[in-house]
Length: 595
Image 1 (cartoon, rainbow, N blue to C red):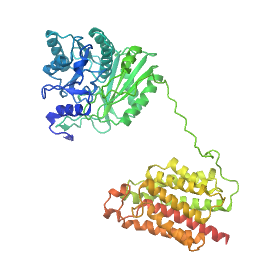
Image 2 (image 1 turned 30 degrees about the vertical axis):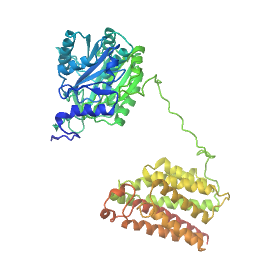
Image 3 (image 1 turned 135 degrees about the vertical axis):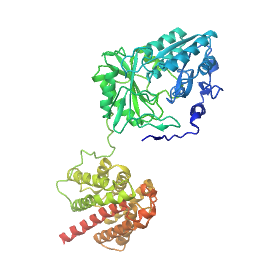
Image 4 (image 1 turned 180 degrees about the vertical axis):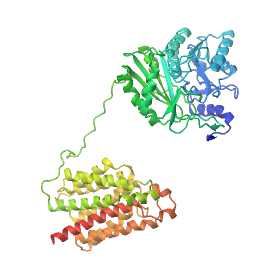
């Protein structure tokens, strides 16, 4: 059912003028003509000097396609952009005002998208300007490859390929070419580019309801940038399949929309339609490049990915492919101050990018050189039983941890901890140098870092690496109980330092801090290490249970009300208490067996 669209706007009838005001406030190199609301023209702030010895390049059309076209005004690209109301061609008087403002003795080129309103209004403005003595030429861009070749006057729609034409025209004008030469370069570029779009939703105009024309799980191929129907509605497919279809349509020899054949060099533009995240656009780009190379036999010389010509809040993207040569690439690479032109793409790109090898660790012992000793020392045996008991306790507690975390977090604490525990168990059988306590603790951290995501993964890695560094300072082969207690204290301090939590914050530290305090207290009192470890594990469990009565001050739980928090303990604290208690019990049982 259609509903009112949500927009962060004031008056729906003032969105274009307010957009322009915000744009020129943002970019010092842009200015606008004082003709609101009828005349909405963005121009270079240095227009007076720019018009003396260079051809002016003007484009424009209905608004709602931002950053096109106003975002591409700047030295080396557009001299001015004429903005109409949303999806409405600008009025003749506004276009004529723009021509008068930026056109000097060298003349003016109008780059116009192929829509009836734009052709008529820009055409009439051009005729009027000529009658006033201005030299004006016009290039119409119709790069749409979604619909069959049309008969009559409509022709192919102007889409995102217009942005490439504007850049080429602006760069050509910046070199000092004549009006006829600039127009010829723009016309040639317009004949070399093809575009097709795919939409997951239609757009919502300011102040209007959101259309539900595209149902769930559907996409529309060739949807116009004003929301007009496309070539076909189809089931949503993986982006790799969608990209393949779009490339086939653009490069089809049956329609011959673009003069591109195997062996040619091309430029690729992936254009977001307004509501498509950069991540999804980059995924599309990553799939398009190898398909162009391997399936179509084309050399991809430049790739531009981003939102260039949008359709308000439409979800989807378009792909533009332009046949390239050295002249076109030089124009595309030429310097520009247009704020929305991607400046990081210039220069030749390699045909294939090989990942940079991972740098090796500076530590003396590499992962490959570490191995489980053939015979374990007494310390190695104790480490093995303690580690095994600790990780099994976490694996057994997975569902409870997820349940608790589902109440106060995102519900994956148990699964995350279980991944780390499973990796530790597997790695211990092959790689842990159990007779070397410091290296073993360090390798536990490496196992965790490799498989555990999120905050808990990095905090436990810090915990282990801090303990490892402290234990390495010991020159003796056997670590004493007091050194283990000191390492625990150092690890807790490191987690507190980088994580920002301390006692009472309702985190894993609420189990580990009391455990550390009791461990040191009992060792200083002369208790045997096993008893001290066991008593400290009881303190860990009590500390974890006490988190039920704490107001969270760190992590996602800090956003949860105290009433909800009181129903469950902190899952991170319970996990810490669980593995700590299991390790202590395993050491106790090990000693009892030997006794």
